[in-house]
Length: 567
Image (cartoon, rainbow, N blue to C red; front, side, top):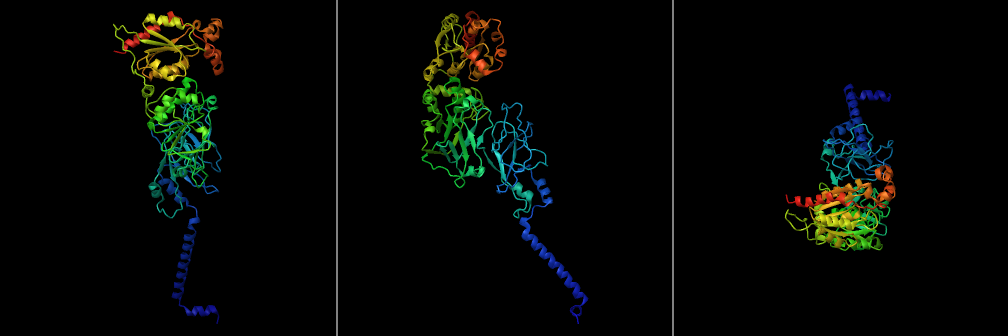
């Protein structure tokens, strides 16, 4: 008897049907066990992708996973409802398989020009951020930004779609805590670059490197990004920046890169800045260094250490009173500390700057030019906070300082101007600014009005008392410079401003060119916008022979302003 026949006799029809059902259940159990074991290696199902995209409140860009298994990040940018600026794409990490390179575009009102694309992580700027709405866009780590402020970037760790720890993917992402960190370096300001580095910071002069070695910075940047910075607040001026030492700012952790050990530990934070650039020119001393240093250091109330690169002893001596009032510690010539590693609780590399010789109260640290002038009065122990208050019957004479210059744009008839000023009703003094800032500051503070041809000497108006009068003599071709560098700033200093534009015959250029020459009639057409030509002719090659009769009404107006301030 065959095997099949024996099996057929051994079981009834019902028992055969029962055995078939058992075999089917067994197969299903084996299949489910196989799926469970290999589930971590399977990609997410399309339906899960759709459910995830529907559950996320913000659109996110995620970096593609590379062969080196780099950590994925999802960077989300808050969207502001009211503003609609143009979008600007800036790459934040190196990507693979990215086929397009979006062109950088800035808001038309932004003064930055010719921006270039960078592949280092940079701070998202402004309060207006917009996320691209193209859902089909290839997921690359791009940050959309537009202005020059620096709020924090939101960084979230991405949650693997096939994770077994989160049954409800949408809910798990909603509950994920977003960590907000301030950007390490703000490189978007059109005038300056500043790195505000928290935690333990090591300054290594030999390699011109600032190490941000705190665990917080290591976790943010993973030791993969660094910045180059020249700590002088005039970054778009190539001539100025050519004499400024470049420093590296490197976020790092001990496990990722070798960091030099501390040889000197400081309890106070530090500010690293350069005394190079155009230092030595009195206007640039204040506009590029002193005012930005005040903005950066004043919030520390003296508890801050200055690290000066491109140190110039004469410059430090010239402004010693200001430096000592901003910091309780002697400034360190950091370039000479080759064998030392200075360690600080935090470091600011670079100086904050708002505008040329201006302070914007709406920007941090929310101070004013009047506050800065009060600070200077304290630094130099200046006595007068307000100019003279004249009465109609007052026999006192307000004091007028005539700023003279020796080399260029000088008055060729200063004595005659002083004589006429006395006849109008002023006590006239003629003097030239020099390296002794304290002495000239005291002289300026003793005056109620000052006049001078456009030039660096007028920077000393910061020492005038409130309500004093500035009379700027505008040389040929100097309209824009005069208005921008002294005219507009003087109004923020609580000063009265008058402007006197000389005629062609009051310029010594009339001795070189015929009176109807284009150099005298249309300076802009003559120099054609070329700075070297403009500087050679109108700044370095021009002196002023003031027509005292034509100028007399301007002095009378100044006297009237000193009377009107009592009303």
